[in-house]
Image 1: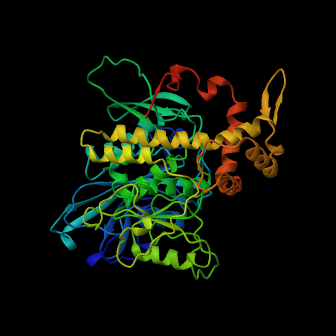
Image 2: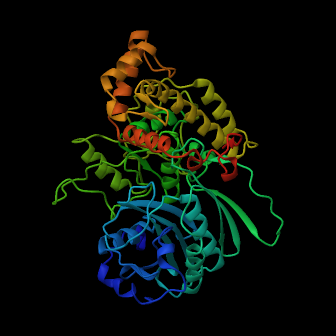
Image 3: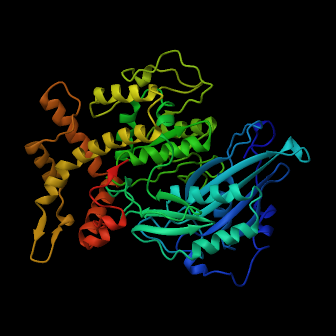
Length: 521
């Protein structure tokens, strides 16, 4: 939250807790339990220059813990704002909640984490200090359905700048009438629109993000919108151009795959949260098993190593921030722990000395003032043909954002699939076959036996090394790191769950939007 002259204004919980239950109702015009299968609450926050953040109202009334409420408030405002900008800013964040009294239905997601989807806006108003008002609309949910919830808050804000309680109540009534989230395609009405919402059987399921045929529409009076809940936010056309070098995509791919510490520093929360979302998407069909935070402010903080909190223990990766002072704090702590890799996303005002060719080393690039160069060591060889084609697409004004996104996602999805091939081959030897099922004995997995299989059969991924022996040693080191990472165990868990479910639940039928004939984004 930006105060005067860009300073940060502290917020006292007691200054806004009185507003929490002002709109409390004993009964709602909808089924609260049904609503809570999708989301928890809408929170409207207002920034008061004298006292900081205030909760204008919350609907439905929710017994958030003071810590969670403070996290929601601090995370819903940019740490830096431009007073001349009146455009809306949409972003999202993730946090570990501490509100056990709030009961809600979860599916694949970790129930200890919640998500906030924000729309921040400021408007000129000469009647208040600083001559403009700042307000944020936040949708808090237990589900990471970023494209869906981002659309909902955008629709609400377009209908009413002040985001009135009446409109929020109507939105909640619509959502409560949807029924529970279900795998496949659901038609969901929302404030005059009809949403075709696709939910995959798992957030990292390979068929997620496919363009499919939707039912024919005859009513031209209704607006239709197709939404895939696990698609990444943002456009690679914009995000890739903010990188120091597009070859940095391979560094990011490896860091995310291994859940190694990585910090994304951007000028605004929209850019950093979208980039984190897109980076995690790169490793699909491997599910990300680490603790990712699309946007984190210095006030919301990360878990401290000791009660005295002498420093921050960076255990989240990737982490999106906009405050350079926060970055310095993280880097100073990283010297004692594991130093994170920093992705510097330069704004349009940053001038670079060199033309951004894909073959340029990241460490040779200019970095923002007082920032350090990264150790850009990677295990895998870069595909220079892919980078040449991508650079050409980024320069071509005729290339659409959808085409560029498809090109990048397909390349890294193929790389992830090749990386998984040796693991799948080894797991096939652990499969117990019976007349009823083919179940993989995950408990029988042995890292040593797998590495022996890798040595015997090799892999299709091109690893670095001057000789075949060196390349094998590099591959062995990388696979060993992966087999000890959170994403490896989550991938095993996903495989077990999907192979134990009926085919129709996994979504093989084209009727639900996940047929084999679909075209990939």
